[in-house]
Image (cartoon, rainbow, N blue to C red; front, top):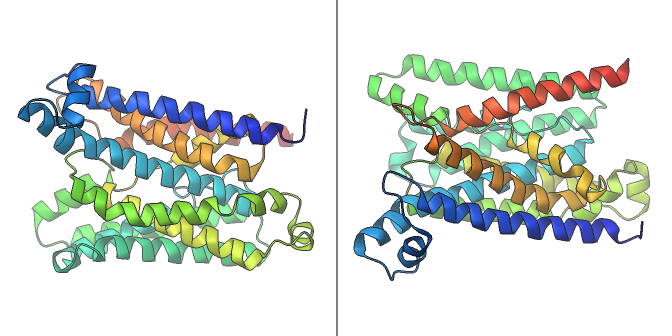
Length: 336
């Protein structure tokens, strides 16, 4: 194995995932109540088809695809970065309570009508709550907390956020508001517009930039904090980049889609061996893989014939929960 083998394998994996993502995006643009051929999709996408085709592709289906990209990339990259920073393979925005905290922030913004004052207050509240949860977890890692304690702390944060969210629902004066918040919390990218894409885009992109900038430092951190510091890694800066990058990417995604869990856990575990278990090389493939997983789940739920369309957060949970259980059982066998 040559020294640059992980780099070549990481680049090849990213290219493969990007090609699959583009192909699946075309499939997503084609399926629906009004199926379109590949030619009609391209014509509608580039404004050369009929007015009806352009409306279906550009205004109804394209926002859904773009949000799947943004949300999946944010969750995938955040999961890989958190696992590298905390050196814990079970770290993930959903399991550590970050997504639930972001959801609580968004629910409070909806509950108090802050989104009516400004569209930016909703993602701002979600990102602030995600940042607070991430800072709490980071403080615990600095105190020498074990992996098990960290996971339990994340579960406690998630439970607290869920309890406060339930309290907000219980006190909501309008039943229709309760229904809207419950459906939003289940996670979905249906019935979204390009305005939602514009709302999340700058924050997710900035978060991804911060996370991708940590690649080399995360590779060195795998050797240990002392070794990484001696090799020139600025540990406070690295932690700040991961914390703020995760808060921006996850918070903005939750603000427009609700809670979508397990993506940041499943994707890095599936791809880690293809990059020689290098945390830094895993970031970009995890971002692309996260987008691919979210889009694939969305395509799947749209093809299932049900009276009411399934919610995306439900589908990802059905995929991720058994995967997490399998990881726990494997870790338990390794300890025996």
